[in-house]
Image (cartoon, rainbow, N blue to C red):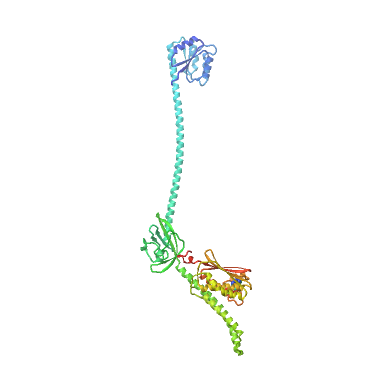
Length: 531
Ligand code: ADP
Ligand code: MG
């Protein structure tokens, strides 16, 4: 909206002011009538002065005259550019005084004022003022625009910087991810390569079966070398070589070190320790089988066991000769005596001689049991039945020396035993127990089940075994008895081993307890033995 321009009309005489108002009356001008220099100064100080286009002023006024007022106006920065038209009747002297002001900033008109001239002058000044105002507005606007632009530019620069930063981070990230991916890919390639090399060169029998149809996908060189089969089996039903996996529960595909027999192309039966694992090959679930052929190891183990037994028997041979020579010497002595003295054989000597012969016989029998190389004939049997059959014999032996036998049986499942051997084990242990006790002692025989084993306990109330002697227990010919053979326990240990049983000894000065733990048949019979 266009603002009215203000014109200050200054004259101490009211009628002159009226004249000025009449001449300049226009809707465009707002004439402010003032009657002294002081009023002018007050007005300038109080009001907004931007809209003042011009001051028309009488020079001669009481108080401050025109020149004094101009001096003051021009000193003040806000008002110094307001143009002034003096009205005067003293034009000559005025012309001189106005020379020190910039041209155009101060003008004058001589009285009496020609209305048209005044109008024209005023119009010119107003026009100048308006264009100046306009310029100022434009320049303000321009300035504001410039500031806005600068602000926008600053924001843009900021945004650009941020974007750059983000771009940089993004690039960095992409770079990292890419190198990670490349690394991962390289690793994968390497591990695939390693797996392939390992698969091909492994000394283990390795095969990969497709789980979907259970056929061989790939077998390695060792697999081919051991089984005798070649690439012709690729695509055929997996596991046909295994002899004990017919009823193999396929839901349990993962196994660890199962002892499994397999048949080679040339019909040889061999044994592997088989482990399996489910792996993904090119997104297909597959079964990896890894087998270690232990056929040679098994042969070696059997041979070792045989050698160990031979060694034991050999070790015993010298001892047995010595043990048998003793009774023979005794008997020979008696016979020599009869021969030399030419006496009839005294009946008293006969029991001694028989005893000596029995002892020799015992030793030979026990030795033969120990040395027996043939495998024992085991069959399912109740341990309690064997004990019950032996009990009268043990009791007779105990009664002779004033001791008691207490048998406590509880129900136990059948175990695989060789009758004869089991009788010998029980007898040997019971004899030792009886021999360790003074008259009046009790020998306890117990059977029970514990941790899936049938346990036979033979406990005496004898003097016990010293720690030193405990270490030698079971060593052939180790004895602390005068008439002892030192073979009883050695035989017990070998019998227990053949029955896959373990023997535990617990001894104190109050007595000794032997506990024999027999495994149940089921764990013995189940197809592939777990290692
Ligand atoms: P032997 O009975 O002929 O001495 P064994 O092999 O049966 O031979 O026993 C070896 C040794 O073990 C015995 O001499 C004895 O010292 C010790 N021994 C075995 N059983 C017992 C027992 N129940 N109490 C004390 N000592 C025992
Ligand atoms: Mg004995």
